[in-house]
Amino acid sequence: MNLFKSMKVYLCCLFVMCISINSADGFQNWEIQELYTNVDGSIQYVELYTSFSVQAFINGKSINSSYESGLNNFTFSGNAPFNTINRHLLIATQGFADLDGAPVPDYILADDFLFIPTESGDPNGASVDFLGADMVSYLEIPVDGFNSLHFDIAGNSTESVNTPTNYNGDTFTIIPACLFTALAGDFNNDCMVDILDYELLVDGWLGTYYMDDFGILSNSWLVDCLATPEDPLCLGM
Image 1 (cartoon, rainbow, N blue to C red):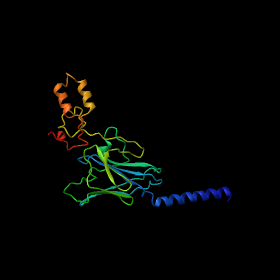
Image 2: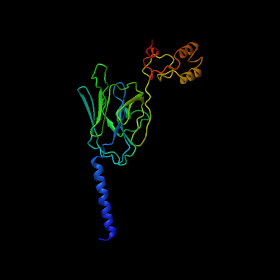
Image 3: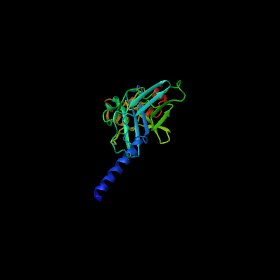
Image 4: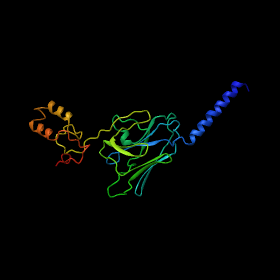
């Protein structure tokens, strides 16, 4: 065997060895980055993120969601694409996948996978565990359809606008129909009274809207029921 062939054999063996070493823990560096649910659990997603390479070996691995005596399980039905550096994985319900403009989920999740803790429930809250990789816990989760739980690398959570992102980097924000129908002056039904409602008022002046509507708009000006759902105007008070 000449030197060239020897080098080829050596490099092939080295490559196989490196892949084998990485495969041994080729999923353990995924982090749970975001959790989202709407109020009835039909639109939910779990978003994972990794900054590491060779984290594709997730076939047969499981994510568990638990609360009190309840346990839901999701099992990956295939590996992720091989290149995982700075990539997301989006595991979402069919209801999410059916939303106009939604990024295509990488995996489909059953409805009601994520639990919604109640005030009278387990004081330890609910948890989501990507077995062997990462686990997060939460005492409450937004159900307003607009905000989600975002987790840092230490597992600390903050509530902010939902940003579902799939492996390809496609993302968008779910904008729910406003549940606070009592908010007077919210002409475009987006749960807040702002410049968009004023523009509708101007466009429909003396046709759809009149002076009384201007007074209603003024009284509710800059009320945001997504940010402050406890505002009396959001409750029709």
